[in-house]
Length: 614
Ligand code: FRU
Image (spheres, rainbow, N blue to C red):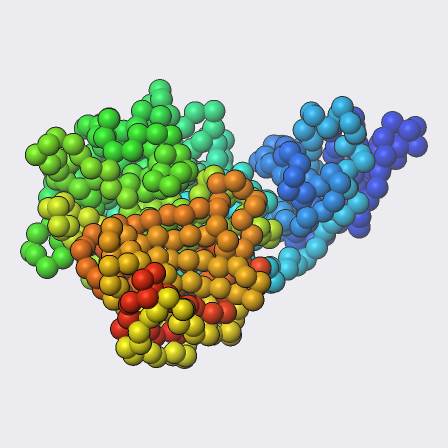
């Protein structure tokens, strides 16, 4: 950094005249200009400026100037009373430039205090390192999670040359939603993730909201063969759609100078596109958020899009906003048939309150989507996951072997910003492979299984039980203890005209309960006594999934991470994703039959190994 000699002299004069105060960490000069305005001059060297954050206060607006010119603006909850954690602002890209931060703290502060009294100025500092080692007890051991900062929707996923690319909505400057960028992770096996540099940052059109990417195999856009083309929503005062492209396989993106490529007068976001082999054109879905419909476009070149139709008015769940659509063809299990499926995330208005993913099954001709409509004319509302914590689910483009692999954000907007973690917030679900099955009612439903790669996590089989009867007195079995008890439980129970309760519990008396009810063909999940629940009135809940079959026997695959439980029906008929925050790990599993008559056909429990790079 160049030394700000002239300014420093001015500051000294002002300070000695009592107009302002200077308190400096090494290489930083902080000068307070008024009740809510502070200038921060970077005069020393250091890769990062470490910004002290207090989660409970409002954002300060930080304008960053390089050599006197505006570079970017970020919003940070700069600490007022106490420092909860630090976030790094990377200065390495500004080498040899003069860096000045113009900080405006929220107006409301002026009534009670002045910015100069704020705690952040005592601890703001330069550093060559930022410690991302994470010791938080609720940090997932085998779910994709950012090293620090806030994450929501998965974005722009594509598979190329053996690598699964995952981008995601990310705030690098705090563990609550703000400063949306596309962060990036890669994996060769869908379970071990490598954190990559941020891929797309906000620019003059606004922050970078959700979107998708494709491989332009035929160079339709003219950027080059196999260019990665991403579309995302630029969110400023309005929402518009922007294009970025990458010639290095998705590591770095160039922003298209012709942006925005789609503008509308009303709120529309989260462009999701795919190559349509039938029509030899691109299709794009856009969530017309407040109008509760999905706009369908087509294009020959990824740049010029023609609106073809709108789908969804009056259909399915209609509350809240419609967001993050996706569409693809899926095979129907056990038949040669294929059907189109349109995913539509909505918030609030989900099946159990807040966020959830609904879907429609039908046909698509490249221009409009026609939903299958039963004889009574009422299109049923279908849900992709029967838990509280599954949202913004979209799929990878170009997954190998004709697979359709999806990933959801494992949280709920009702309380996502309040969950009891600090350095990071949110994880993604396990990756899932989907197809369709036909229910007894003749309807098509999504079948969901954990992606086969998830088995790579398996450690020792610690329990193998065959044929035991279950009475009213619980059958109790210890859970593995390594790595805070993370495990996979595969079990099959046969009930006799009454519910069977499966409980995970710890020494503190906290428990999560699953109940298989063969009478009404449901599986419920109750987390009301699961551990910490009081951070939001919406968290404590009992959710329920239909089993989609009339059977006294039910097989479940249950994945227990440090702060989540995913329950898959063994055949894929339903899945339930729920966060839980036990104060100590669950150490026992117990099974009991309400009428004293059930049997455990089998139960295999595997300890799981933590994923790498988590
Ligand atoms: C869904 C969503 C999207 C939007 C993004 C912003 O969770 O609201 O519609 O693009 O989050 O982060």
